[in-house]
Length: 626
Image (cartoon, rainbow, N blue to C red; front, side):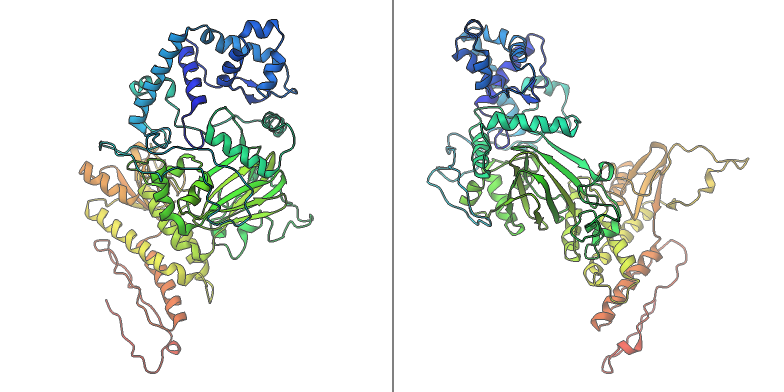
């Protein structure tokens, strides 16, 4: 289901599930044998080709059937579990007549049609427009660009299907966040068909390794090469004639420990390429964030054969580095950030993303073969990572990865000052789309400014000065607009609220308490750092932009309070200081004073002192007064 969500195996399995549901049996997960999911659709087909259960039992062919299903011989009680799975899930379905089977198929296809009308096509292409054929696999060279165009593949260039315009957007390969009970009943057994990656359970590393070994023996009779694994992987993804489920794991190194040495006396514990040390490198601006899980704290990736990281890029467009500690190779595919517009158009066309940008489609776990992308003119690079090697992923690039067996790798993010402009733009886009960010871009910029302002020649100041000015102007404008709308109650983070004291001097219990100075806006999921608007009685947080909309809708500011980290003078002073250093370094004069917000009481005048030594004899000095 990594490419298209529908195929012959999925259709047969849906018929089995629908019949079981009519019998009052709900199958949430497929039965496991040796930690591997049993392919029920293939099981049903094979046992009928061998004459049915009675003949398989009489001729003692259960061992042969288990081998044909590639169930590992090391799996405990594999024959007993296979027979139990047949009796529990397939016996009643196998006893249906041919007419009943056809009726089930028609009902499933009708449910599929209903689901596609609501959430978009499951197959990603129309059989009438072009035909999808399996591509011959090969071992391309590392750094391949535009690959080899094969004779077969897409017969004609993909064209977007013309459909009647409907209200709302149809999203392919995505789950609706809110689904009513009527909708759940309407789509029946296909309600989660747009998903292809499911949350697993917590297991020990020993259990995971045993499962990885069994999956490898199911798929390959002998130790395969990376080229053989790649060929079989894309055959499974494209042909969809059998069910293969694999697992992957993610481990927080802050809790369970890193694969790199961390003891002071251990060799390489302070080495620059140690990923526990890299986040604190002076060249990475992320060091100003401190410990952030999934960003500056490395995490371990545990994989097995066919474990996949689908086409994606970091949601913050951050660069990152991956080190393969041990185990089998990893095949990496990369699309440069410069190909973004072309990739968006190609994915939108290939997947029939009616009304949805192609890049948003990739967020829903989709794998598209590199040859198809190359044929459509998208540059794709490929490399094979071996144990002991690093892979550095550049900011904004699109990556996908396929594991060739059991392995353990470690990953962490970093960023240079050149990334800040891209990161600032990405943060605004995530706020617009209501996507939670792992860290606050406002916090990062202000932490950089505070740290670099203490240095004589802060190299990062010239890069972030324009972003700080934009952030300052937006913040002060929104505060002023809220004040004019009637929001006059405000307090600084951590300040004492005297109004909460009773007559006897004891503190009144408050219905709402600020647990932390960084809270997410309940509307856009923005991580508030500079300021927020809180509704104390209901424990609700708004960013300033969403607070304005809330006030306009409610026509009242009752119960709202502005909480801020820096007052207006501090914001203006910090930005002016940064602007002064940058302008002085460039040999120019720049007045960065912003007029304080009116109706807020007296304010001290912000001034900019420019040393006379920095002024050239030919330049004329201008005085600023307010």
